[in-house]
Length: 451
Image 1 (cartoon, rainbow, N blue to C red):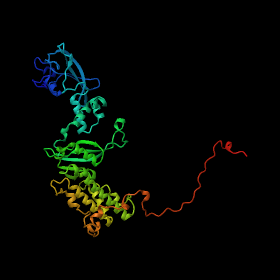
Image 2 (image 1 turned 60 degrees about the vertical axis):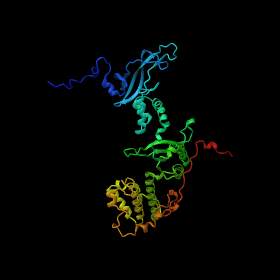
Image 3 (image 1 turned 30 degrees about the horizontal axis):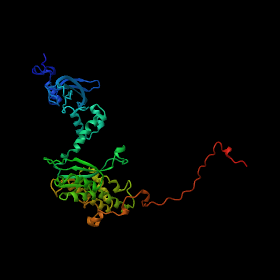
Image 4 (image 1 turned 90 degrees about the vertical axis):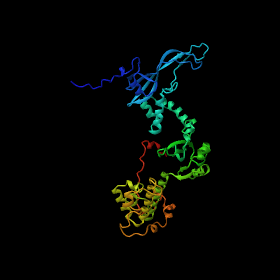
C-alpha cells in the first residue's frame, strides 16, 4: 500500500477558508493585494489567466454628505494585470456600488474607489503600470515588448504609464542628496529637427544630467536626472540656475567630457565643486593618441596609409584593447609588429602609457594602480622588452619629447585614398582600343534626308 502524498493538515483551495468565510487565504497571498480577495481563477480562451477579485462588504457613507449609503450590488471591471508565469493576466474587479439616501445630495449613485487596485477609468492595474515603468527604467524594455507581455496594445500601455512618468519628472525630490553630478551630450535622433507639434521628433542634440552620488553601501546611483534641449554650455548653465542655490551648494564633484562649454558652466554655477573628466572620455583620449601615433609612424616609415600586410595596420585592433584581455597569440603579434622596425618603438611607448592610464581608474587607492601580473611583469612600460632584438636607443630619444606624441601635423592626418602618396610606378601607356559603334535604328531608312 502506497503512502499518501499529502499531509493530513493539507487542504485544497476550496476547503482552506475559515468557517463562515468565502475567501481563500492562500490565493489572497499569491495575489499580493492587501484587503483584496480572490473569488475565482480560470484559464481564458487565449491561454491567459482570468482572476476575479473583490473587497469585503462593509458600511459606506456618501462622499458628499456623509449619510450612510445603500448598497446596489457589484459590477465587473476588467483590468490588465502583471503577467504570471509567462502568461497574460486579466484582473476582473467586482466593484461595489452604492446609492445615497439623502434627497438633497447631488451625488446620487457612486462606485468603489481603490487606488491600490486601479485608478478610476484605468485599463491597467496600478501595480501593472508601475511594473511597466520598472521594466523601462531597469531592464531597457520597450513599450511594444511590454504590451506583448501584458496581452494588450501599445496605446493602452503608454496611456497608463505616461501620467506616472509626468508626475515623476515633476517631482523635485529626485534632486535631493546629489553630491556628484555628471553631464554629457546625447544625440536623440538623426532626422530633421521638426517640432513635435508638427509631427517631428524635436531637437536632435540634448544635454543629459546624471546623479553619480554613492549610496550608503558605496555604490554609484547612476540615475538620469534630466534632459534639456541643446548641446552647449548655456543649456547646462540655465539648468543649474533653475535648480537653485540649495542644489548647487550640495554638489561636491562635477564630471564632464572634454567640452569647454560645460566647463564654463561649472565654473560659473558650481564654484565650490571639483571639475573632473569622466573615465570614459579620458581613456578614449588615450586610445585616440595611440591611433594618431600609429598613423604618423605609418606615414613616416612607409609613406602611405595602412595596407593589409603592414605590421602596424595588422595590430590596430590589438592596440585598442586592454592589456589584461590579450591572449598569448595577440601578445606575440604585438611584439612581432613592434620589433619589425626601430621607429615602431614610439607606438609601443604610446600604447604602454595608455594602458597605465587605463589601469589607474580601478585602483583601490589613489595613486596606486592594480598589480596586473601580465601587464606589470611580462610586459613592462616599453614594449617589447629591451633585451629582445637589437639594441635600441632610450625611449625619450625615440619619442623626441612627450609633446610630439600628443601633436600631429596636417600631413599626418588620414587622407582620402585619391590624395595619398604612393611609391608605385605610374601606369604604362595603354594602346587605344576601338570603341563599339551604336547600331542603326530599325527605322533609320525613313529618317534619311532626301536629296
